[in-house]
Structures are given as C-alpha cells and as structure tokens.
Length: 168
Ligand code: ADP
Image 1: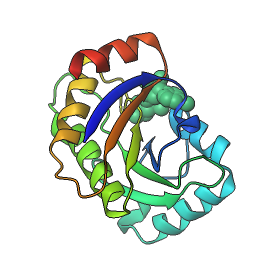
Image 2: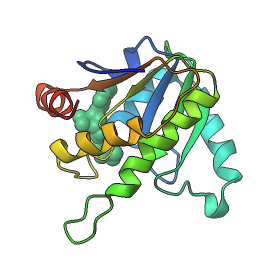
Image 3: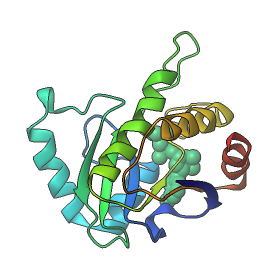
Image 4: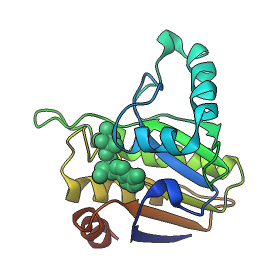
C-alpha cells in the first residue's frame, strides 16, 4: 500500500473512496463535509439520513465509519467518519487514529483500490495540524488491507500538505 500526500480539493479526487470528515449527526456541515455534499449532490445526504435512522440515538460514534455511494463525485463511495474535537486536557488521539483505521477498513471491505483522506479533525475541530497528520498516518498504517493499493491524503493548503509530508 502506497501512502502519499498531495495538495488539492478532495471532491475532485479520482479515487474509489473519498473519506469525509463528518460529524456524529451525519447530516452535513461546513468544511470538507459541506464541500463533499455540495459537489456530490443530494443522494449522499439521502443515504446518510437512512444510515442515521439505523444508528442508536441517530448518531455515528466518533472514531467509527460508515459508507454511502458518492453521487456526482468522481469517486464511487464516500466513507463518513466523525473525528474527535481537540482537547488540551484529554488525549483523544486514539479516537482520531480509529477514524482513519475504521475508514480504511470500510473502504477495503468495499473492494476499493484507492482512498483519499482529508485532514480529519484539523479544521473546525481544532486538532493541531502536525499531530493530526501523525495520528492519521499511524491509523492508516494499522490496517492490513486486501484491496487498497493507494492511500492519498488530499490537503487543502500548503501548511496541511507540509504536515502530512513530514508525518509520512
Ligand atoms: P473537522 O470538523 O474534522 O475539523 P473540517 O472540514 O473543518 O473538519 O476540516 C478538515 C480539513 O479539511 C481542514 O484541514 C480543511 O482545510 C480541509 N478541507 C476543507 N475543504 C476541503 C476540500 N474540499 N478538500 C480537501 N480538504 C478540505
């Protein structure tokens, strides 16, 4: 499995699976979540609603991952995961690693060969970028894949790209 980091807009990634930095409510939001729903169209949200109805309390636990199709995106599937909110008092890094491990497992279970990840938790959720990159790479490397050949971290700006290049 090849791991690499590129700069770009994840909604344009030519991969089988795009991972979405969603929230537990699964009904869209800002940041990369909003961009994925805006570019992918309403089918993704409709599938999220159906998935949500089957989850206890209608919430996706942070660190877990679920898949929908990808609507109008070039990708075939979107894997939605809810990252932890950064806390200076509490170490939530295992949850962030789990987001990446579980998302990659779900993608691999779908038979995906290529998977794009954004910098989960490093936006509105406030995780320091350098550590977000370290946790993401560790989470991905923990998976023994059957199908996935490439994990591509698609970063929105140069700072995020530099952090992921350093972690890799
Ligand atoms: P979280 O709530 O998990 O922190 P955000 O969406 O706020 O998620 O931010 C996660 C990261 O995604 C940030 O580094 C942000 O710059 C980046 N991002 C936002 N839009 C896109 C996009 N279209 N493609 C790739 N990354 C994006």
